[in-house]
View 1 (cartoon, helix red, strand yellow):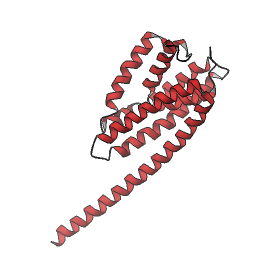
View 2: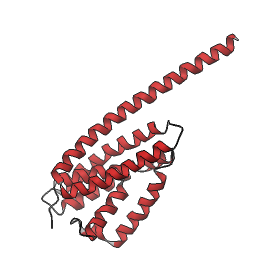
View 3: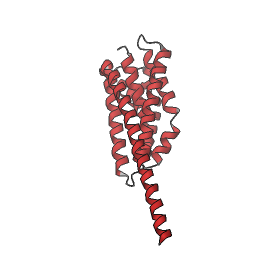
View 4: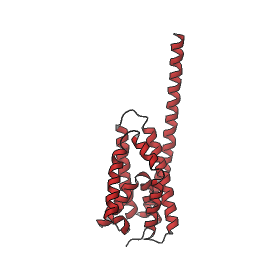
Length: 200
């Protein structure tokens, strides 16, 4: 059985913050299909079934404007707590302290969840739904890639997870600045329009 390292924990934590159910589902399926050794708890048919059902629900909700933000709000506590449990289970297969692994995965998930949910709020300022679908599909692909990478190349995955976390927070800051600038422009336009109507 392959020992799980800090890189595995960080990668799985990042993925859990973006899509917890997809991460658990993949860990279970990869283990059952012998793609990579994962803790037996993830490979339980019950766990795989529940994670699969919740993933399908999230797959749909995550692609509907504003529903995705409500879903993210609901999962603000669920994703980090779930990621902490994922980290603790992964730590059982390595030399990591369970507490340290849980805190590392939970903290990483909190950061990636904040970047995801904040970016989605910014994306929802767009009137068309295509952007939401494309962003959601990109996130699904990133989660799948990160889970596989964390199991096959844990050290590199840990570094990549940290880089993605920093980039995500940077994109979040940029997105919010753009949104605030758009709001200011809208308020200025509305004030000018009211003034024009008043003068007219």
